[in-house]
Length: 373
Image 1 (cartoon, rainbow, N blue to C red):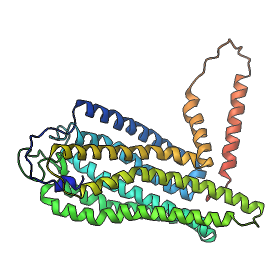
Image 2 (image 1 turned 180 degrees about the vertical axis):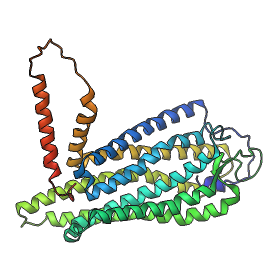
Image 3 (image 1 turned 90 degrees about the horizontal axis):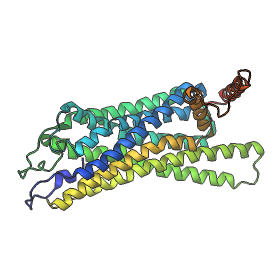
Image 4 (image 1 turned 120 degrees about the vertical axis):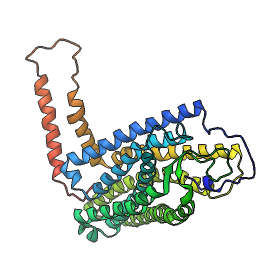
């Protein structure tokens, strides 16, 4: 919900019409449901790969990626409720139970906080690994688990629980001059309006804006550190290999940050737009609703990019993803030969050889250090 929905001027009377026509609804539905499917498939695949292979599951950085995937998966699963709120359920939240409205807002705000804090945590840990490798090597999986649990506890307490009380679904009086006369049916409760405004002013900077600034600063510090190290003329072969691995790991971090900023810069711009008072005219009404819809498209798109960037930025992740797809998915596809083959052909032998190679690669990767990505 934008503060624009709170701060619209009531100077101009106009006949009410819903913000989206049938064409706008159809376009929005196609985009959001496409992102929903891609988000669910991509994040579910990443979760399955990490859970399947012990070498990934025991990796410190992968613990943060695993938890971030859960946040993105939850966001994707509730995205249809956002679509309903902005379109078919804009005037009347029916037949969906009102508790789904509360759950949508609570989950959406909680996962937004969780995403920002996860990306910041990932950047901080990566900086420690680059700048202070000795201290980083002392970090254990239990430390990452405690860190991640702390993030989720903070997001539940500060995001999910308050939102369950602040938001609700009800039919709005479109003919009145009440502040909520142009709001979607699923929005903040009018009686809690002052509380919500105060909540936005405190929670959004703390859980969204400050982490975003922290991510950018941390990324710059990592880049400066690597540049100084690469400028050294006395690197031996071992140090050069380590520097290449660090650059590859930082590439993954940069891709994740790009995805994060792609989603949250439009979100921030929408919030600043909404912080200003605008005339109660249909033009501004349409601008607000389309602005809100487009910034949500950007959020969903960024969450679809994350699984792709996890693999682009990590050779190990790509290797295990390919292995998982071949063993768990493509193994069930039977290819029909174009020419007749005799029962004594070496097809089975070839298949066995492929499996032997895959198992050999799996075993080799299992023996690598759990701190490497």
